[in-house]
Length: 134
Image (cartoon, rainbow, N blue to C red):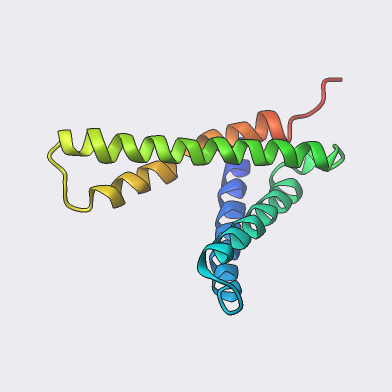
């Protein structure tokens, strides 16, 4: 069950990323780039929340969605911070120490993006969509 849940989590995240990316292109038709990015990010985050609530952690669908969304946003803030820290750690320390300088920021960012996939899953499982104690 856990492996299937994690797979559903990855699919939900991928779909939300597509919504984020595609909506930024649409928003850019009538607003500046940075506001389009912010609006697209918010739309992607709402999409991720709804998909996770409905298909990944469906047993938590009876819980208060406002509380869940607050936790969802907090877990996502933690994920962004992790992405920044991991990306900088790889780009500024680990990759140069290994002699990797070509595309170091791209490689570092990939590592930074991958790391929070696991911690976000755990955060959403144990905080956002946790089952109330009975």
